[in-house]
Each structure stands twice: as C-alpha cells, then as structure tokens.
Amino acid sequence: MGRVQGKVAIVTGAAGGMGKADAVLLAQEGAKVVVTDIQEDKIQAVVDEIKQQGGEAIGFRHNVTSEEEWQHIVDETVKAFGTIDVLVNNAGISLAKSLVDTSMQDWDKVMSINLTGSFLGLKYVVPVMQRGGGGSIINISSIAGLTGSNGAGPYTASKGAVRMLTKAVAVDYGKDNIRCNSIHPGYIETPMTEGLFANDQMTGWFRSKTPLPRLGKPENIAAGVLFLASDESSFITGAELAIDGGVSAT
Picture (spheres, rainbow, N blue to C red):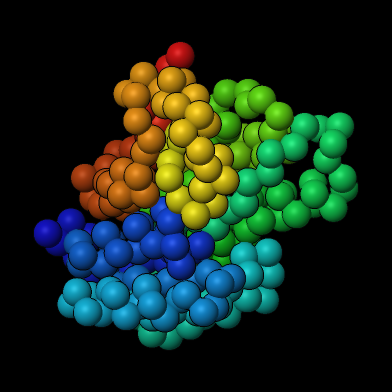
C-alpha cells in the first residue's frame, strides 16, 4: 500500500474497463484521482467506489478531443489538489476496418480520440508538471502500436503515433524530470472489446495467438500503470511496456 501516496493523478476514459481499473488501483495505493470520461452517467459510480474504499477522487465529464475541456480539467485539478503528478491517457476507441473501407469521418474520429486526445492532455499537463518539479505520463497504446494488425490500419496508425509521441515527450521533457512511457495491452476483456470475444470460437482464436493462453484483465494493465506512476520506475522513460501475454513476441 502507498506506492503513489499523495500523488495527484488524472485518468481519462475511467468510467469503465482499463481506465476504471487504473483509477481504482491508483487510489488504493494513495493517489488522489481525477476520473474523467465522456460517459457522464458512469463517472460518479467510479468516484463513489473509490471513496467507499477510503480513497480520494473527483470526476468530470470529459471529451478528450476538446481543447477547452482539457483546459478546464487541468485547471479544476490544480484548484482541487494543487498539482498534477500523474497523467494516464487511457481514453480511446477501436476501429476494425481496413484502409480502403475507412471513410474520412472514420479516420478523423479514431485519430482525434486516440491521438489528438493524448496530445491535448500532454499539452496542458506538461506545464503543470514542469512547475511542480516533474511527473509521470502513461499513454495507453496497443500491441497494434508495435506490430501490424490485420484489418485495422487506421487504428494501428493511431496507436503507433501514440507510441512515437510518447518518445518525443520523453526526450523533450526528461530535463524537467517528466517521464513518459507507453503501455501496449494485448487482448484484454473490457466493454470496448466484448464484441471481439462474443463467442467461444472467437475467444479461442485470440487465446491461440497468446503465448500465455488466456485473455488479459483490466487489472493486469492497472498493475503496469501503477508501476510507471510510482517512483519505482524513476529511471524509466520513453519505454514501451507490452502487457499482452506474449503476443508481440510472436
């Protein structure tokens, strides 16, 4: 307990799935957590769960593609807690379409949420971390950001861009004691992926592609987030942490 005691963390896309697991675990380990999500009706439930466990949290509706909303979230976080030590850019969407089947509307949507959403978080949180003497930023990418992915060109492109944006931030702001790393989940059971695992045949296929023959859980990703948020990883920046049961090794 207490691995991030007293730190202030913003977690986007935290109303469910991996984001919720991240927020809950960070709070359990002592962080003051700001829960943000576009799903306004689910935010308070996560905040209440954290508080019931003795943690500290506040929540906001948040469209990560909006620069004005990012400004608001950062301002309100500083107002409430004084600083920002940890940013988890978790909000994202999937898009299972090939390039030729992707409309410009599809392309713009996946890029605006997966890439621009992370960029805006970085743009407004980094100055706060600079004033505070440093911090840890964790960008949630995907194994699709490490290797090619069948029938998901635009999604793969967005997650690959998140990976490289992470490295650029690590290089630019290491001098300010700001660390930036990416996590690359494999096949994780979340509300966003439930369509992929809708039947035993599909689930079996994904398991067969995973050297550790099982699907991942949101808690597996949260454990990596906690490590990168904590001072245990104080000499790690610009790195890629694949939490994928070995998929990217094949």
